[in-house]
Length: 284
Ligand SMILES: Nc1nc2c(ncn2[C@@H]2O[C@H](COP(=O)(O)OP(=O)(O)OP(=O)(O)O)[C@@H](O)[C@H]2O)c(=O)[nH]1
Image (cartoon, rainbow, N blue to C red; front, side, top):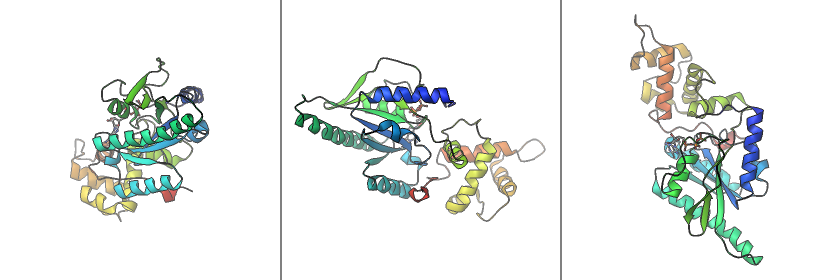
């Protein structure tokens, strides 16, 4: 589900995350590998204060691998560990566990020096809606414990999942809102399906995505729909795709809503190809 973020909700979500943060040693932040900048929470840095974090670039199977690697280098350049993850790949999940253990170890060493008795390192998962939090928690727990599509505001007692002997995870994730300030961010989030389909009109989102393909992935556009990247008129592009994919109304007219649906569905299931909407050098 997608949440309508009103100021009251935002304040409440922030408070809930701050409460949970007190219980953990470090944070595992999830972003969408197809739009790591837009799928970050704008306040997380402030909320985290001094807590260490690692970043997981989720849904890597849908993203452009070259750009994902650039993002990993970018994070590492800032001293932040980053791992690209496909939740269905056991190796990726193992890598997350290993990295989390390493991060926990640093904390435990520090405690040991202070003479505190050893205990498991504790972490929580944090991220915007639909980024893959519940699915990852289930994989880490190796059994289904969190309902996928969990909602914020449903308070339950905090429980710890023992992932490894010396690493525990909070069973409910922290949910924060995505960036909303820039219009283009809204389009990118709508494209990858992070914000509800009724917030921005689907034909506009599809047109935004076609322009993006024309500029950045002209070959994929041509391979999927036989559309050349130099057609400027979006109506013409939609006519072409509509004819090819049979998006017709009675009387043979093209149904543009259906064309837009086809474009968006193909994209979200990676039928168009593995695509990333943002590169680190776009960040100023
Ligand atoms: N292709 C792909 N899909 C993924 C991956 N991780 C999660 N998903 C899908 O993303 C969708 C959202 O996953 P959830 O685990 O419900 O996301 P969430 O962050 O808990 O969402 P909220 O409950 O809305 O906060 C589901 O359809 C998952 O199957 C991944 O690595 N690859």
